[in-house]
Amino acid sequence: MKKVIYQHYGSVSDLEIVEVAIPEVQPDELLIKVKAVSINPIDWKRLEGQLKMMTGSNFPKGIAIDFAGVIEKIGTDVSNFQEADAVFGALDAMKGEALAEYIVVKAQTVCKKPVGVSFETAAASVTAVVTALYLMNKCRVQCGDHLLINGAAGSVGMAVLQMAVSKGLKVTAIASGDGLAFIQRWKPEVLLDYKKHNILDQKAIYNAVVELSGNLPFSKGKALLARQAVFASTLPNPIDMLKAFLNNLFSKKKFHIIRANPTPQHLNQVSEWLTQKGLEVPIAKQFFFADFKEAYQFARKGQTTGKVVISIT
Ligand SMILES: NC(=O)c1ccc[n+]([C@@H]2O[C@H](COP(=O)([O-])OP(=O)(O)OC[C@H]3O[C@@H](n4cnc5c(N)ncnc54)[C@H](OP(=O)(O)O)[C@@H]3O)[C@@H](O)[C@H]2O)c1
Image (tube, rainbow, N blue to C red):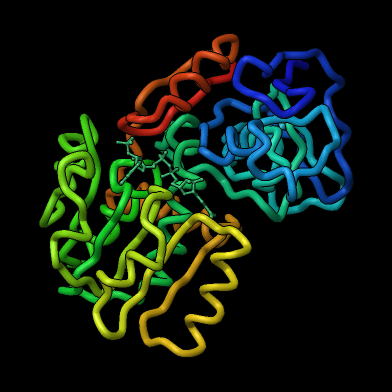
């Protein structure tokens, strides 16, 4: 089978496609024929060696975590799935190798793909929507509260925006370029262009701030918080985690750093959001497997409006 790997830390040009054996299935595992994967920033952070401390120096490594596909073979202990079931999920964020014709996964980590949702949309939704669920949970906001989303046109931001608006929050969304028009459809109360406005100059106060850009540290962002409010970030690093721990001992302005870990319960919620609650996960561009480098180059450039997916037939 074909699989995309890299032999050392580097850039998109270091990705290569190789022929490897189809993996064996352990009793509690499923062999999945991958139909689509989506690209996430974690993929290139790992590839570029930004997470070396956690990803180590064993090579080759595979790439991509979010997938959707069809069960090809079932481990002897698995009873809750059948061959040919369509499923979706995410591999471990530090070890993802979903960009391949086949992958094996623990049966308890995936969920049936919602009926009527394409493989591409299912793969596009996992990390983005599950992370949005974590953030909404941490923000502890109620109808009428003010929420700021910094990075609202990105994959996670667009999901948080839709969830927040549907909950009756007053959302200020920060984006730029084509992203501004792109997210207008979800009706944020205020839309700001980060290339023209510095949010810190706006003198507004929020019940929660969701930071997705990597450009708003808590040390600055806390000035935007009401007396009892939450600053939630998706960018874990050891220093900020220590700062968050110390801050939260003494301050009513809480600093939370989340690390999303998609479980089947989360995936069920993703299905519900997609099929019953009208959540949209637009696809910016869909690539074929053979064009995986172009797909990663396109995603890595940023300024995309929606998810980038790779279809594998
Ligand atoms: N901890 C976790 O479990 C977890 C889970 C998911 C994601 N993440 C991380 O969370 C971040 C967001 O993920 P994502 O998938 O949404 O990424 P994304 O799709 O690349 O979105 C990032 C957004 O940030 C915007 N941005 C860039 N510079 C900005 C600035 N100075 N001010 C305001 N916005 C700015 C970008 O807008 P432009 O395109 O207009 O520049 C883009 O829309 C990534 O770093 C990702 O690795 C962490």
